[in-house]
Image 1: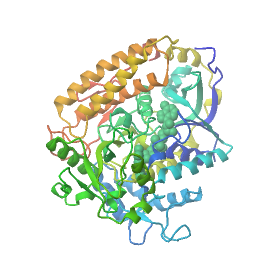
Image 2: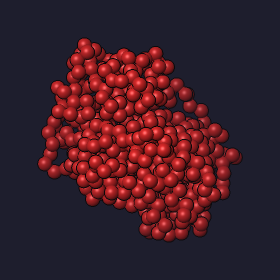
Image 3: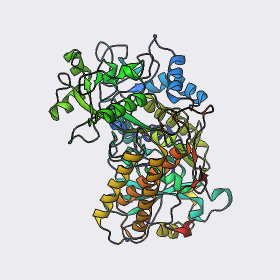
Length: 559
Ligand SMILES: Cc1cc2nc3c(=O)[nH]c(=O)nc-3n(C[C@H](O)[C@H](O)[C@H](O)COP(=O)(O)OP(=O)(O)OC[C@H]3O[C@@H](n4cnc5c(N)ncnc54)[C@H](O)[C@@H]3O)c2cc1C
């Protein structure tokens, strides 16, 4: 422990880790029944939510129907969705959207700001126009208003630049019996000063988002390192379906463009994919051509690139009305222009990139994880909504739906945090050894290696041989990380490297255990579907398809 560490725990009824749409929506609703501390590892707005472009799917048009949205979701999910859960979410959609409007979110309307009808976009896999959007900056608009609402609520306390390191459990405070496994808080580190604090709460809510940074190419911002997945696993919670990584088909292919996504809504407005010879190729692969589900589009692009040897394909909007494009996608047009590309006037180079994690911490309809006191909401959770593949624009809806369910459920959690004293301090010291020096170069090298391995061996198309290579190499790196952890300063980079290495390994383990191709998981060894759809389930110390999951060996006395 360092002198700068904060020895007095911060106690509250609820602790939220993450300030994207899921964490903030939870905080606003849960504040009605208790105080909420929200810790977030960068500035409040920095999240996947902030970059969502397309919008949020909900049945708000008289031309649409709950049944159609449910069916579209189930079809995309390829047999692994929980239909009862999907139904509840879809039926709640209109009310959830109205609540966002109540926070001030200005969804684009037909006939300008005063128009009564929402302007609805259409995206791949949707049988109707049903995607509410704020031009092409939907996520930023939602995030801005939710952050403002949280700041205005005196029962919600937002702490920026605080990175959650590991969950605390009853056993860390000397609790025994059923309370030993209960999640009671989190060790948190200030990114700027390095000082650490303990947060204790009666319910701990993981809202840490996705893990796109596990791959070399991703649409996700830097925060998406799968920290919540890794923390939950280390604490012993069940995770499932991590093999279902959605690759967005169209990220801008440009040496200076980092994580720049060209929304699927662009194809919804009529843009088409072409190869270097100018051929529209999607009709070769699927009846819905350019509006086929994302996994099909990503695989088709992968196939075109591998067959031709070209590093990218192109999105063609030249046949569309320039004014309409500039009006509908002003942000995209401007960003492309900054890279020297005239989006409406020339083919835009694109490649697939890791975009969304469909699996996650296994939760029930109230977002409860398998450990008492622990909840997971948003992209970090596996709720049964997405199954083997996410329908576009269902994730923002899922996040607000499950955040609302969790906010009701947590009110029943017993009051515990206020009375916990125990031996937290010693436990914390064991988990956070005194820092020493480590070479930044080693760190950076391992970061790149993990991401490269995942990209090369665990990408859009998989096979057993490559998964085995990935597993062996990731394990080697993990051992290095473990060594680093016992010596290294707990810089955010080490914390995140530890997490991406573990998440990569977990994705490989889930992928190896699935002996079929379903939804987003496509393997050359098992190209067919098995007759019965089953979740892959992962838990610390429990073998999955013959391989026991990684158990951290940093501080064995913790166990
Ligand atoms: C470019 C892009 C476009 C997208 N477009 C759409 C779309 O149009 N429609 C749609 O439905 N979905 C879209 N998605 C997906 C959607 O944005 C996300 O799934 C959703 O926003 C996730 O919300 P969340 O609250 O779960 O996580 P996030 O919004 O990612 O928030 C996670 C939060 O956790 C914090 N955090 C992470 N780790 C820690 C830690 N260790 N300690 C403390 N804090 C931590 C982060 O800093 C962040 O505040 C898009 C995603 C991307 C990347």
